[in-house]
Image (cartoon, rainbow, N blue to C red; front, top):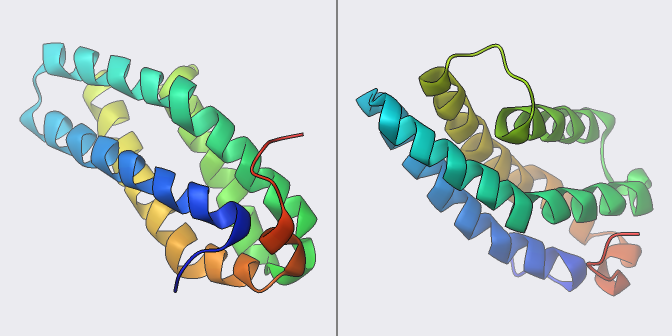
Length: 136
């Protein structure tokens, strides 16, 4: 389904996140600690340049169109945002390869869920068509 309004730019940004997720999973599978360090730097950069603002815009849309999204989907999105935030730039109890692996797996699953489940729910809401993609 073609995306409209605020969802268009968010959907486009998902591609770069899927690329990072795939790279993270590949690096973690190899188990090379130096490569994991480099990958973690890429993850942190992606967080700063894309995901931080991306998540803020998605969360704004969840608030604007709360009546269009089922509670389970909204709860899942917010929980995954929190975990991805922690994995990307917060304290984490996982060792580095496990952290990189978890980030890659979760980000890929998260993007696919948004595209397949959340965005179709949001797209039907009139405020999303006219919403800006800037956070408040």
